[in-house]
Image 1: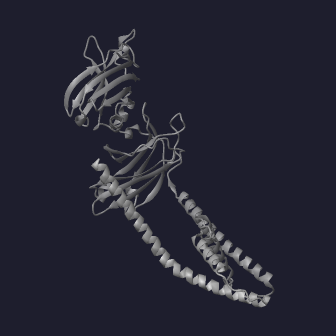
Image 2: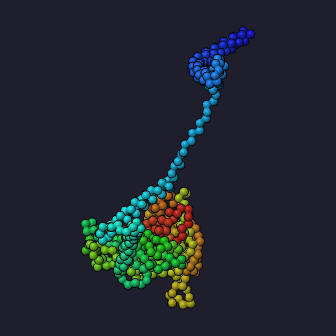
Image 3: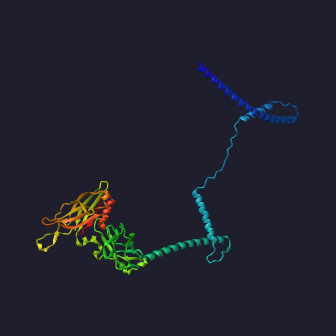
Length: 470
């Protein structure tokens, strides 16, 4: 109960304070406004009294001035004071901004006008000053003529540049080509010799108009390089897939060769078509005796390719073709995550016959073989694991389709190699070797390429034909 009384007392006090403050504010506002209103009312009353006196004088009356008009005017003033002010609508014309395209078009138009003005005010070609004769139409015609003259000058300049380019291309195309054209294409090379470091630099630039060796109408050419009479050290360019006009732009260095020794050498270049599943096909070859070349001038030359006449210069990988040892189709698949190499012996063809058959033994001619394939996993020169296929009796084109797995860790894949040997089985005597091939990163160019393809394509079988060697 006491709490309710206190709440009521506080409410009454707050209400009284609020009422007092509001009353004081109203009084202050009235005190501020009343003198101004009183002054305005007095001025209006004086004006009305003056007008009423005039009216009275006009009417000839002498009526007294009452306070009714003054009170009415005061009330109207108070009402006008509390009325809402009139709304004023402000209108402003805003120009929309120009778009970037419009600004660009305007800038181009101004530049075009300046260009036309510059061309039109340019003096004639003969050096005589331009004279304005005739009417305004003649001046406009003169400007048009000068404009078109400038356009013709620009056009002739571009035509001259194009003609120079065509002449340059024609001159480049018209470079002499050494040798006879056997329609096997041509190859462009550059030679240079550094007399201080005793280094011969050979640049294989490009080849053109090569014949198609694949059934698809293209070739996969690469270039083999020998410095004859040395046949052991050979260099190979990259293979350009499906290209009859390949561009290699590769440099090869022969270091430590004195100039008098190089004059005894012959540079041999052979263009070969790479084939993954069969023997690579030679396209053409060319010989460059270095004693006929001025190496101090860094010559750039074209050479026609001629047919490959001497098979000896194909290198060691072609001895199998000469001895007719045959070919072997192998598939390699490496899984680096588990360290497993899978070798699939698919088939062989054109194997050399080792067995003597027939009615007469005196003929001494081998007619067939009993081939099988033996494989050794090697690390360096050490043989680790051996596997072999089944024996196919009396055939020179056996089909195996047998797979074998070798455990090779990823950190040892570069050191590993697979020695594949094709053998002829003999019941009575010793088994004879038909041919072999070594697969690894340090083998021949074709074998190394197959090995590198296997590494670059993990978990994918990569098949390739290999020539058997002695």
